[in-house]
Image (cartoon, one colour):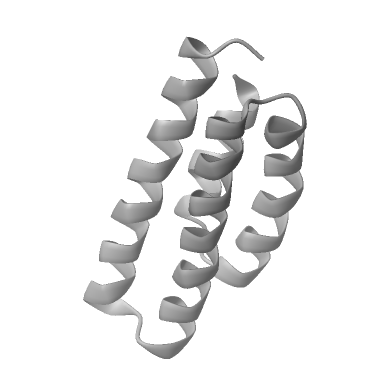
Length: 87
């Protein structure tokens, strides 16, 4: 579960672009041992992290916090699926 703690920290990282790159590496570990449903959830979360990086660069402020909340919810979905679905 340490991987999820690290991903959680990346959602709130100052440098969203670097965080998205690191998240991609961590997500590869989850995706490699997961089901098709987990793979889809990982893809959704990665898209959210890339969106977060874009929003941070383009807008910051309120939109950035909204993007972080969305990414956080997607990460929660991956956590739940990882526990519920067999690898």
